[in-house]
Length: 552
Image (cartoon, rainbow, N blue to C red):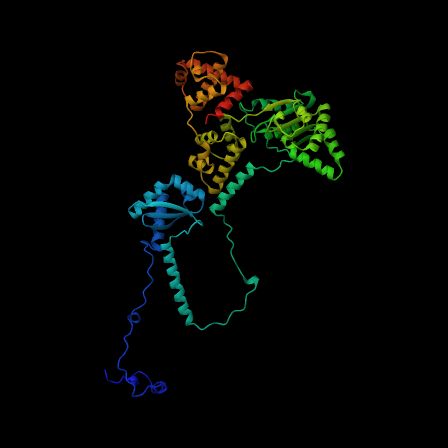
């Protein structure tokens, strides 16, 4: 190509003049080819191979929630899905959802996967493997969805930069003061916050602070549930409360049991009754630890004489909770010993509680143990099933919490060791029902109270009841089922029949057949005999409770 390139048709004369080395002698033999990439618009970056973009995922999420709302009770949907359950990604054969708390994840996994799968099939036409992640433990969106979002954000940023480059820079504004800055603080609690509040309420109940010497007016005899495990202790402390001191039967009383079985409740009930019947009496209810602290403070400020005078001369009723806390405290034990002697000699009322009998407490001087044994020593056993149910129903009434009989039975069958834990379970359920605005059912109880692990055990049967009674009384199973009528054999057989009726609701006919083909009248007689003995015989109560608590 020899023709000269017509620069003058495209450039002005002035521009031509200013071009270096450009004149009529310069010829362009070839015009370089323009790269193809400059001839077409830039292509958008290719995203990961996700079959759904962000908008499609949002639409699918909305459809799934709508279907779940139709198939799940509105209160449960509001609790477990509304603003807590979100479609995160769909990759291959897996569909992933994010949830806000571990509790909600467990509830959905255990009870709602079938409904979710049905909704997915209805919308996407096939089943997927469902995975749940907790928000914050993993990215809520998959890498595919994140790529989509990043790409969208990148395009917006690039477009904004290009537009800003065409705008003349404005003068910088004067820095604003702190008074010009405004912000909004959102104090609305999340569902995770509410569930944390539920846990805090439960923990506060299970770990009460020191009682000091304050008497709780809410702990009375009227709201103490009596059963075979505590009827002897209950009757005795009522007798003391109605007639305290030397004029009564038990000027010194010692009650012991495992933690959480009602000892402290009885102490407060006694104090309230005495204050009601004998307002002129000086009543002191204190823990052993606070007693020791008070003595140490008196020594530090050199007022030990005033401390001794207070307890030995001014008090009419001394009640010390958890007296075992004085173990290995020689100085405090010495003061307690002298105070005990003074009050006992004056005919004042003394009541002590502990988690052990006096002889079982290590680190207590023998002379102190002897004083603690001077009065009546009683123990409280773990409550039986019926007593546990009664305790739950009473507490539910106080909390204005409605639960079905199935829920009461479930909790009472799972929590056996502690009244405090029984009541704590209802406080937790009540708090959850209030903050989440839902009705409590068996599924929620199992999850909230973690009853799966507590309730696991062998199924209770006629055979297991008989075997446990046999082991407890050291009587062969064959003798229980035989026609033998020895005193010990008969008692073991009758207790086993009683528990079979009460726990299993087995018929008299089935029980009679199991125990050697006896007729139903024999079973009725045996059950009635144990029922009557439980009202008066503390040893029978202990036997029944021990066997029941060792069934599973």
